[in-house]
Length: 266
Ligand SMILES: [Zn+2]
Image 1 (tube, protein in one colour):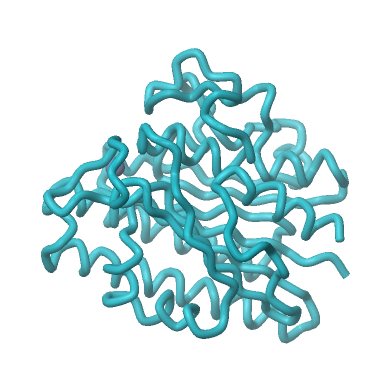
Image 2: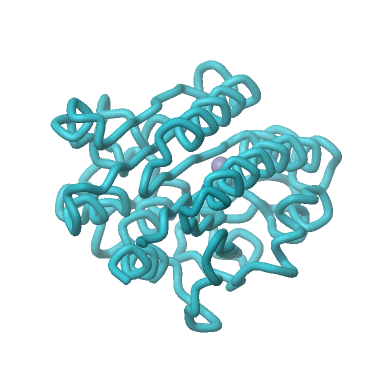
């Protein structure tokens, strides 16, 4: 049976802070596949998520900043779309509160709309606006929608995105208690998602859960530059009802989507 894939994106997460403030994510250090990732500058969310989700470099997808002006994403489909094009029985789910990832209004989104598959319930998309309404509220809604989707639909390939950590980093910096509180909040959402996947895997479905981030945060808060702290990302990949993936010890950001597609093919 093909593995189902859940990719969890946590925007702006410094790994070292995560390992201190997030019991569920930190526990993966002992059981999951792990690789550091070094993101290509500029370390903005637009180019970084475009690379992670399409498996192409900044030069290829053409996303230079968060305006998405001049992008070539129509030629470089996202993970969910690639899985569908590979096998048209594939069901997909995306939930995000940062509109450029999922909202067809504007120049993006990175996750292609695929309206026909939405009408056929092969592709479900939850669009929220954390930029306007704040990520404390919106991330909680994203978690609820994702738990519902995993529990009731068990989509084959999912992307679930949280942005409250990045928001806290911008407002308070990345070394104070507010940043760690935001990480702890998202960690409980991740823990709940892992438990929902565990339940399904115990009913005989193999799942692969992957957690990553698009960039780090400077101590004072902020990113976009080319310092090691801003470029630092990571990948955890945990199998449920199946082994962990046998990926190379060290991978690049644009390797992630092709590796996940290969897990679907294999
Ligand atoms: Zn940010």
